[in-house]
Length: 362
Length: 278
Image 1 (cartoon, one colour):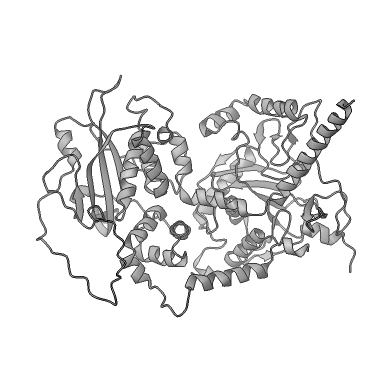
Image 2: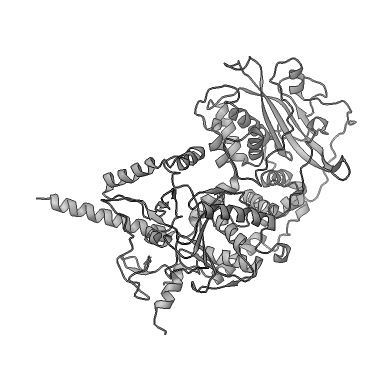
């Protein structure tokens, strides 16, 4: 009996073996390859890269398979691996204006330089479950192709900026802080907030952003622009004295244009919210931009309405799903020592109350 | 990924150095919570990542490690953490409190008194003793800086007014060297007296909350109380069913569905040694 309440190495080993078996599933069904996950579950891979803060589609796909498709568990695997990799430098800021856009839309202008490029999106599909599965490996006909345009695709906010209609985004050469190398200190600068939001849980950001739309810290956001595509990553090599391209990452960038009527300190002009996330991750990028804008209330002289999305400490302390899930799930661990202490306390308080009641009784 | 792919005790040397600096600062300012750049570990936050990082930063190849959870060496998470260090550091492990040079613990202080040269590492979920009175970190840091502990005194007083006793049975707050109020981690208050004047170094690691704090050997640690309601360590009023000890902390085990219970030492090493040889 006593033995049964304790753990035991063999029980753990057996649990691991059981997990390995169910992870694999029916052995008569072929095992998923990492390449299949990377190619066919690309949006799951993107989410794991974004929240794992590591751009490596193959590792993300591997993690998804190992995690049985639990994306937060996959993010956790990637994060734990990521910490073991030495950090050897900082890239130059990526130039999203030079992005080779797979998709680029603006909700604020019907047409604009570079045009609206719809790209691979669910936005215009009817969500009808395709119950007639593609039998076998019938090839998907290739999508029609246009000649790649070489027209530049300037940022919409840049166009508004020329007329002074939107707050200027001034260049800032301050070295960005690194959330993964320094403890979070509050209040946080915007760069640090954006860093935290970029790796934050998509669901948490989605709900917070949604809450601002419903009136809890409303910021009247328009999607000025959403663009998705690869950008070059360049790094200054001190020995060379110039920057070289060391790779390419796919990013989703969302710039919101927010209605703003001016405050005690600022003239009436549009303001900005910003989202930038690894991979094709539109929902997350838009949510990030809305939450970023809501968090800027103090800097813009707006009122604190007490909305959750305005509360920097609340948002930054709770947006990380690896921290959240770990702490949430740790209550599965044994707590019998603490619980025993509580039992003793409650028994004693009850006994005292009963004794008092007995004394008071005639 | 093989264990050989990682540095001794998993963390790279720069990270260990950063953690050691936080530990040294913590020892220099007993009870003060030192922010540190907690790393993501291969076990979940809330499962001992702070303790694991402190242990990793302190371990040397000659160390003998003991890991307990709820006082027991064989609870699942203790087994998991012990294995982690066996795999990544290759250190010797023991269940014997006296033999261990470094003990990582969750929720207990061993019954066997510790000695000079030993290190006790606590896993801490919420390092801030004022957190549930004031949720905001900049505010609680200010309160510590100004020694503004009135809120805590009021909380304890309200407990007495409402329940006739201080209704905190674990993670019972302490004052360190008359200065910082400190959360001793969720140990039962039965263990609080062991914190004071311990010959061992006591280190506290909170991974998710990115804080390290420490009690150097022979530090004055006082459990908060009032003159007319003095602190009292409590335990279940039974002898251990297995070893008969009447001075150890007990776990309650339900043995049937008729209200049957038995009480056994939570410290498995201590209990085994108290039992007559079979």
